[in-house]
Length: 195
Image (cartoon, rainbow, N blue to C red):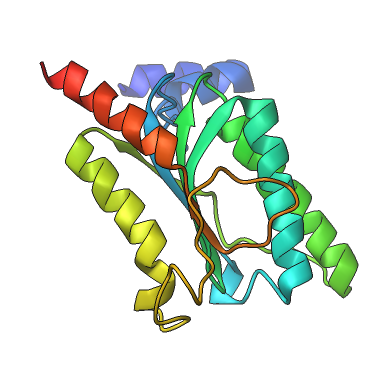
């Protein structure tokens, strides 16, 4: 921008200045591929616990089930760790940001009310990574399912962590899930894309 442009911006309206100076400032727009699959995670502020007990976990899963329904997601896998969570989601609409805002915001408000806390529960925006291949997809599912084992929370995810192969339901209290039918359909989807 030249000195003349800067001078004219100083004399113009604030909105015109913002559009010239701040066009590239801010967060990059979320990629929300309709029909795509993402690995999504969010962590507690200062890495503090985001679940105080099993009632909090059940409450989070209930809000997750609501977000899955309202946002038209398919939850292929999830895992609730002590200070963060992982989701593997398939999107049928561009609704990731809106759904995650609802999930994290609603859960944080209820958590704070229940425990007499104030302020932020999550340290930042959620993180999301688009899954672009079958190999990446299988790695993400494996990572989510085995995360409790790697963290030392349990020795066998199928028994001690109560991992089941099903989509989340509001009444379940399991800490990690993967949808077997969705795994199969994703394999077929990736196979047809690579053909």
